[in-house]
Amino acid sequence: MEVPILKQGHYLIASIQSALTDADLSQLREALIERVGRFRARGVIVDVTALDVMDSFAVRTLRDIAHMARLRGAETVIVGIQPEVAFAMVQLGLTLKGVSTALDLEEGLLFLDHQAQLRIERGTGRIDRG
Amino acid sequence: MGDELLIPIAADTDVVTARQRGRDLAAEAGFSSGDQTVIAAAISEIARNILMYAKRGEVALSVVANGDRQGVVVVARDQGPGIRDVSRALEDGYSTSGGLGLGLPGARRLMDDFDVSSSVGKGTTVTMKKWRRMNA
Image: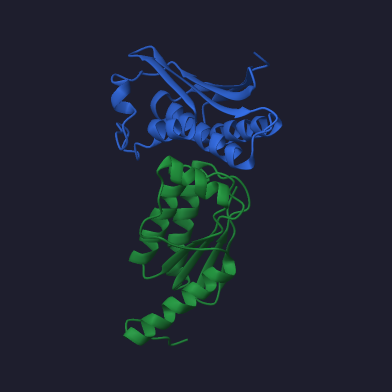
C-alpha cells in the first residue's frame, strides 16, 4: 500500500491512509528523501493519524526519515499520533528523540512556517529564486 | 480454552495481519481501545522477531477466562535458531540482529504475563497474556 505524497508549496505531505508493512514504511522513506531533492522541499509532514499501532520498526523509520530529510535540508514534523498509540509507544520504550511532532496537520504546517521564518531571521535559509 | 486463531508468519504482511487480528480479538473480549493498541503493538514486535530470526513461524491468539478475569493469550512459535541466553534477550537494548533490541523487553512491558521458552537449534515459543476484569 503506497502512501500518497502531496506537494504543497515548499512542503511535502505524506498522509498515511492504512496499516503499513515494514516494506511500505521503507518505501515511504525512500520516496520522501528522493522527493525532497526533486521538489526542493524545505519541510516534510508525515501524517500518522490513521496508524493504530506504532511499533519499533515504524518509529525507527520515522526517525530515519526526519534525520535523512534534515541532511537534505528539509525539516520534518510527525503529526497525528493518537493517544493510545502514544501510550503504547511510551510503554514500549520508543521515543522520537530529535524529531518534531505536532498535534495535527494544521499545527504541523504552522510549525514548519515558523521554522522557515526562524531560518530567514538567522540568515540560514536558502535564497528563494522562485 | 476457547477457539484458537492461527496466523502463519512468513512475510511482513503477516505481521500486519497478526496485530490486526489481535486487536479485533481484544475488542471482542471487551478490552479498552488503549489495551487493544498495547496488545497489537506487542504482537507486532514478537511477530517481527519471528521473521527476523526464524524466517517463519506462527502466532496463535485466544481468549481465556480465569475467575473474574478475562485474558487475551498470544503464543508465538517458531522452529528457528532459538535464543542462547533468554535473560539477556530480555534486557533493553540487547539485540543480535542490529535492531533496536526492543522486541522482547518492549513486548514484556506491554503485557501482564510474559514467558519465553527456547532451545538452541529447535526454536522459540513466546507466550504472553493481557488481562482485564470482567464487568469492569
